[in-house]
Length: 512
Image (tube, rainbow, N blue to C red; front, side, top):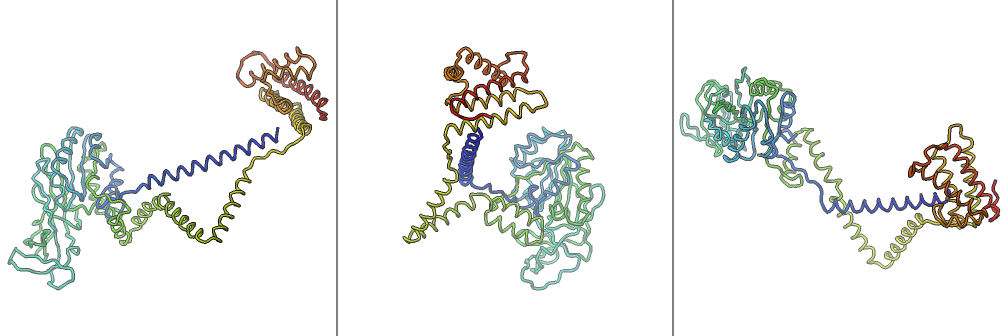
């Protein structure tokens, strides 16, 4: 019995290993065919971007107090709701169309009890939303250049030529606009003094923010054609933020989205966080049931494998931002480990190497011999062989197994169970199968057992009793209802001993 069990286990393990290998090969082929999942890299102030110029940190910050929905497709607006909804867009890369702006406004008006709109943008991409709500506010799309001291007219490598139209129409050179960061004051509930980056002026509505300038400051408004207008001295000549209520929709516009970026919120400058907290507390009217909807559909998403995405990511890494580096690693790692990346080149290299080897007869013969030996050795390891034994030795082995089983049963302190009956039944079944090549359930066993015992009636009753209790022990029958398994097991052991003695006499196997 133990030899057969060992052979079955070997056969089972070989089949299992073969199936796993086949499944693995099929899986690799399927993965290669499908190709790696190429992640997208959102460009700009997307709420999906953890890079320095993204606004993911803003979404995390707002989720602590409000319900935040990041809109990745416009149909998601149909599933929004709230006492107050604040639709927010930060420096969109793609302009809103008037048609989609009307759809956004109309949808949110039906889904929310009260609608408010926050736009922080230095371009004109968001003006269509303002048109959709009939607001008078507009973002100019110019560039505010601010210098607290008089501009020094000095030649530089990267200069902008501007035409000063305030006093005289003269042409002058000013340094690169990136060096100009306007100091502004924005009033929400309290006054907040902030430094903006690429800020634009705002017109219309009720001004709530302006550039802090004095008589010694130089403030220019520079359009995309580098035509600039120098503003007259004064503290409130350049508006950077406005608010307005139109048809019960409150609109608040800031001409710069940089104050909401990850690099600002993750810095040690607390004034920006305090401003944002007060801003949304004001818009949500200190209501925890406020839903903040952040647009994520108006940003370019590049495949990480594209040249533009790699260039953009490289620029972020050169800023020294560790988060950007980790983000790049997280994007690239799944592509590198995907079979579609390394398996085709590997197979191609192996194929090319094989072709080069078989070009020479000697190397081809050596390679063939090596492959033959490897294949033969692999097949030999999993070869299933059975050592032939004389019937007498096989019977002695089975009787030895039964002897150990009998010893275990009669030394048990606890009551015997149905499982013990099944164990003895299996021992008898294996012995009869070995001697006659038949299972106990086979009707032909009765004829052989009659010859062995010399009494057909006794053999018939014995088999009926054995099979009936086996059906109950294995759960296939409920009869007999009352049964002592201890007595049944011991009786079956006596039957096995009687049959074993007869087999020992017939085949000359000594039973101990």
